Length: 313
Ligand SMILES: Cc1cc2nc3c(=O)[nH]c(=O)nc-3n(C[C@H](O)[C@H](O)[C@H](O)COP(=O)(O)O)c2cc1C
Image (tube, rainbow, N blue to C red; front, top):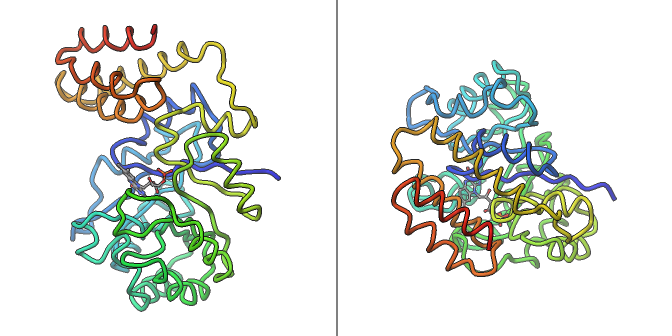
């Protein structure tokens, strides 16, 4: 079966700089979802959101923009904006689990309000020709919440529903709930994409065996922790290229230079790179020791020395 791999968005990580560097050195991802656009009560797009999806910043990538909102006017405003840049599809985030979002009835906090979801989808489909896709958890409090949303979603011509097989309350803790995910497959007419905890080639194939009808898979943190993963899945091989560390070194060097140009001040660049290393370190034999080395570096020179030590070990 042909499989499609999608990069699941991570706000603060998978911006256009990361996506371009990833595409250049690794590949294996068919489509990238950009991190959500969120308006804060004003119909106004922040420059950083715009920069992230400008076609000139994404020339070699297929990108689908994402919105997080609970308001039809905001949704329609962002539709106009992305359409003005040439995009045809907008992905709707009903998955974010953080209290600041959930308490405002957004992200996974909106899943238990099917009527509001209906109202928004109704207006978006009657007042625009945008293609809508969903990315959601199975609920906030419990995994049955999504079952009350499916009959609403079934009324609309959605492109797909990507499901992160957790509930919001879990944040990122505990495991994915594959039994409840399985129930979702039987409960909607829409095409379902799977998302959650794909971190190894072996783990991917176990999932594919368990869910043979799924052919679209979204990978989030696993792709940052091990950027070789999507290509290895596509090649059906758990073998890294011989020059693995050289490629990885060039990749982080590119990221480092990109952020040095974009951010002001050494400490911001170091903070940014350290946040990536929180993920990168997982692909090394001793993640804790690796991350500790990076965190110890308070100046650029020390950071560069730490990286070269880690890569040569
Ligand atoms: C730091 C962070 C930021 C995230 N930002 C977004 C986002 O902007 N939009 C979204 O749909 N999901 C976001 N997610 C969720 C991921 O896309 C993904 O659904 C989740 O991590 C589960 O998939 P994974 O196990 O493959 O990482 C974020 C997750 C993390 C940890």
